Image (cartoon, rainbow, N blue to C red; front, side, top):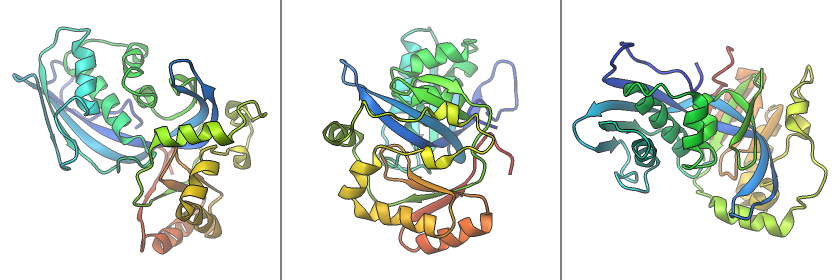
Length: 295
């Protein structure tokens, strides 16, 4: 269905709406440098997967109500769902909303859960209040909330440049069964970017991922994540997870974003399940697949 998909029963004058708030992985991630405003520029392929949170949004007489199945997300300015609602309110005169979020995507895992939630709220509020905003307009609002938020407005498979907000849709995903392995480590993205300045050569010649997708068979061996040279030495357990995924038959394995999730792409579901059975004794695991691919 992709990020543009949502579930509701009425088309006109909606009162509530439910979204699947999907996760993402990065198939390759290059760090190109840092802008004067402190943001880092990257080149990556975002792939949206079916593993998701669920967000229910309703019109409300109150300003902004928020409830969730986890106690670490609160109804305050640190909450990306609340920030997303406020970003709409700052530009349009609308009523209040009630947001109920069922979290499954772990925080600090490199899967973009918070960014996806924010995108779902932007789309949901626009739909509920019939603002008739284009995807381009919603994306222009989204970028102020976080670098990954614009991707989730459309989802699917997209090349991301700039800080991740310059997006170009790709016609096909990397099909397969995606095994997500999530160690109990929350990595600080700011730390990872800071460390990247010490060890990465921003001027080294690197492949253009969009061009590689033009090949009949996408050569995954060229899709490297620059964060791995920083994160794996600091957290060797993450490197061991990647080695295990490859040893059990994945055609590709990588850190997602700055981590801590490691994912593998399998052509064969049985192999993915065997790898999962080995790793699930010590880590949270999920098998998922691209939202824009029918297996």
